[in-house]
Image 1 (cartoon, rainbow, N blue to C red):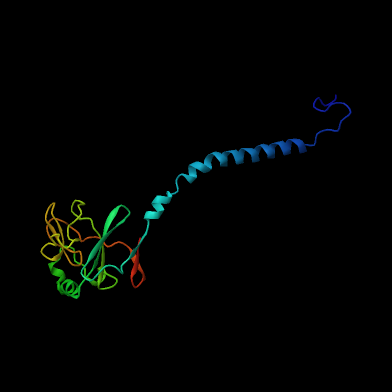
Image 2 (image 1 turned 135 degrees about the horizontal axis):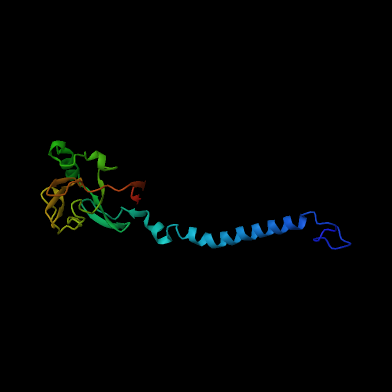
Length: 183
């Protein structure tokens, strides 16, 4: 009996054409799935504006001794204060036993004269006063949160009021003597 798949007068199929069609179909399907899935996977990457907020550079040269500036980083205010020798001395003279959240001044700064803090009160997330010369600086010459009366010292440590923790210190590095990168 003759093979029904092979027409008379032709050679029997050895499977080469079938293998080629299977391979071509698989490759076409893989490329199609990749073309559909890639935009979805790519959408999970952070946006350019988010990456731009991941770190910020600050030039400290214009900040005079005793002055403070506020910069935004990741949507939060960051307080940078050029501390006077008196600020440093009073922060270092404070006994740790007087602090709610004990931390030495040295552990909160990289250079004695520069203090960098996230300016968000640790009680309810308010922004404490004390950056402007006309602001109340609290009982300890630092920052004062008028919402519930938290007082922070010149090292950003909680000294009085309901706030449970010190003002947070963000990750930062000095890229030169007068520039820092936050984040």
